[in-house]
Amino acid sequence: MPKMCAVCGKTPRSGNNVSHSEVKTRRRWLPNLQKVRAVVDGSPRRITVCTRCLRSGKVTRAL
Image (cartoon, rainbow, N blue to C red):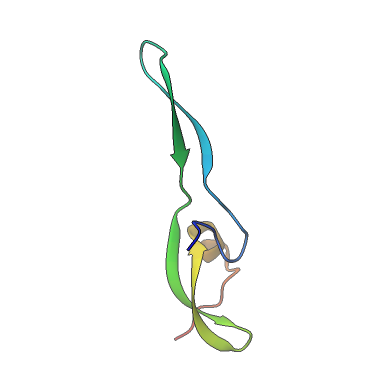
């Protein structure tokens, strides 16, 4: 399963850890993904969604 939002397609970003001596090592910023039961095409399904899509109301939760 990819670390990707099913609604907006948000994926991990990459960059550097920078220490006090400015030594740089690679790192990743992962999106805050949650598994939720949502209504997809009229039926409830389990999808992985980022919290920004949940908060903005782009996802209709299934009861």
